[in-house]
Length: 168
Image (cartoon, rainbow, N blue to C red):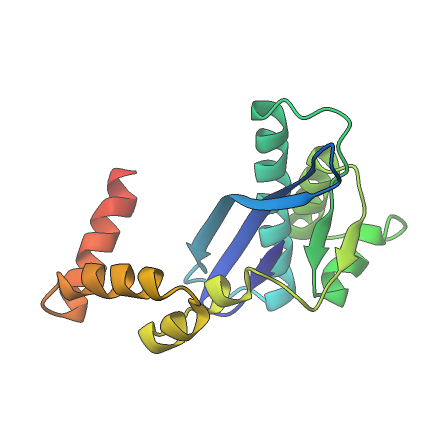
């Protein structure tokens, strides 16, 4: 799944397995969030960038997990994005053409339309209150609050997060 807004670009990958008993298990495997570039870029182009990141990440995961005989599904809610991917007759400018080439190189399956997108919140950001409402587990909420309480103000929290990202 991938999504984009004016403030962020996000993607996430899930692994869905069915055991011998027919029980389904879904697990979050990887996700990436980026801040959108300062240079003004249209939302359709940002969505294409998100699809490019998703296709590359999925290819790496498939190789690392040594998945064989798997079905891959790529989800987006953007009809413009689906138009880019499914249009093979029109020539695009270099920005779009380069990303389309990458998407087609790394992903051999069709992108599907979906209004249910798990990356939606990541690409748009959440306040602490919204994050608390999303968490259904009381223990998760307590852990989150304890971590946030370690910082005396918002700026120190942002600085610490930036250092972690830079270190990574």
